[in-house]
Length: 89
Image (cartoon, rainbow, N blue to C red):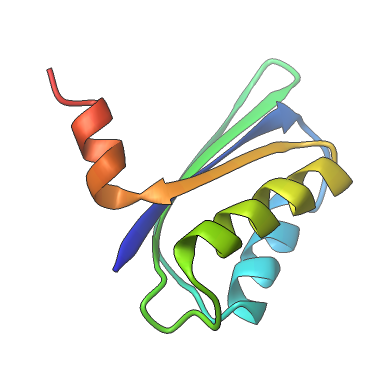
């Protein structure tokens, strides 16, 4: 199962390291990643394989959100199918 993770907020060092390490600790694998800096703001989107994760999607999404608050970022995780359905025109 794959999920889409979005990370946004004011840029600072270590964001990618913190998020990727968190996902690794949870047993998730990053399959694709894109990030950019827009002025002083950071934006990243990841495709993550969570089939090997040690927790279910809903719990993992909640933990991502909480970790984001701790580092001053907005982190949102959702199932890839839901992301695709929301962005289909």
